[in-house]
Amino acid sequence: QRCAGCARWHWPAATRCPGCGADALAWERASGLGKVHTYTVIHAAGHPAFDGEVPYNVTVVELEEGPLMITNLVGVAIEEIAVDLPVEVTFEPVSPEMAIPRFRPSN
Image (cartoon, rainbow, N blue to C red; front, side, top):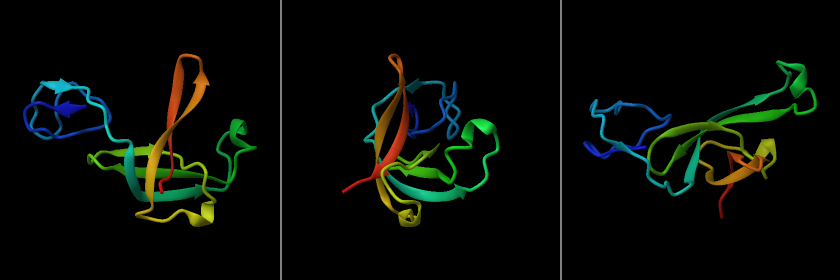
């Protein structure tokens, strides 16, 4: 979302701008580009559903527009993940109606 009052981008979605408090918010298409802000590697599954997934990364991506998104990086070895790594969005389908945004290194 982007605020029509102060032009600030924000995520997650809200009913008021966290910057200026305006309620004039609009959905706008973001570039899909960003960089790794921070990350961690999970080595122990916190739930049996994740037993086959460890180790996996949980990454905070800073979008070019400013907001931070919690996600996973795909298409990269864990040891190659680094702060400031340029990334781009990719969408992982989970059903015919839904896809999850993930990020991969950009060229």
